[in-house]
Image 1 (tube, one colour):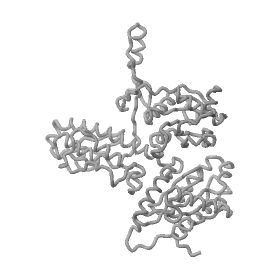
Image 2: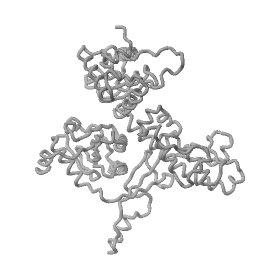
Image 3: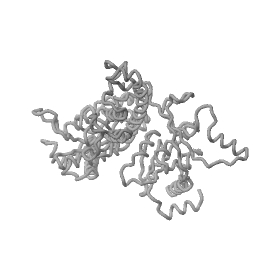
Image 4: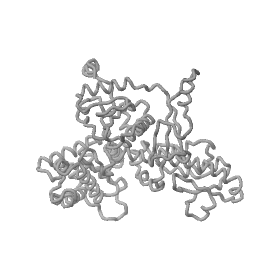
Length: 520
């Protein structure tokens, strides 16, 4: 660290940065003091890739910095290079740095002992040194086309595969012979493998209510373009993949849109898509993703199918298989961006977006939205006494207990270490006419509080029963807050009041008390 770098950082404000911390970097508290840094924490490298590809909102800083704890990465240099290349694919301008280690694959390194000014100066220098001007060529390889075995995960490499000489080796030999060598672009090879994925099972993530789709897809279902339907008379553009792109963006299955395109390209109307176990599937052409058959292309004209048609359908089955793999990856990235990997709850990003959208809908429909914010009393004590694995178990079991008492339309979100927010909102009202009124939200909250008190957490030994409690607060729109930020703030103030009362309490705001119809 040079004196000039430190001085520059201390005396002049830098441009806004979006900093993504991966693993236990130890830099959270220091960087949080910089007002020009939007700080995001992730546990795994795949989560960091998801966060990089999906900023919190349009006001998030354009310049992204990913800072990784060395312990989170494998020691193998090629694996580290693959991770950095993966970041480059998502955002070519990203600055990748590593903590308490040095590695040429990264743009720079940081130390936990550095002050805020020193950290800012180091990041600034790494951004300036990083060369983003060179174009990148992407080459997508199917694992079936490779002779060498590959890892059982999606691999992103910066090396050539196979036994033949690479372009770089040919260039090196030409240079050694004195021949002029044309300037080449760096090449990144992407190997896609999804053998263990059950395609149709993923539909549950996208098949949610309209607010969920608006949050996850970033689109308003009422104002987005319509995807191609299965009505063949709509005459889609024969060589246009846009219907599949639109279906994917809206979280809808791409198979229907693809079937329309296949019929149009082949000038037919009798090509259908059937399940592998349906009658007639043995005569068709399977669509294979990894080692799984996701559907079979069939045709009523068996004579055409058994002559020229089979080769044509094989070509389109291969084309559709690539689209399905892309659809799978999109779904996985969306999950990484909106869920907490430890507990399975929704994360802070999802909480804020969903709550804002729910309030907007509730305002139009004259409905209420209630939020409960709570944390686990003395959680640090259990974490420090029994270890992080015990703390992780407490958090996971807390979410499981909470999901067992809330309604299907409610949302459980982990918004901090041991801090949670529950959004109570039923946009469609009672599911059946004449059904009994739902339990009050306060009753749900109290039942959950009681479950926590009486639950046996195996890793806490003799302290498991009767010692774990929660303190929370309830606030309701429109009385306690007019938007997501003010409503969460009101619920948080009530939770702090519960702490002041001696913990193990749930405090209601005026609006929440009205909604819950308490007879106190």
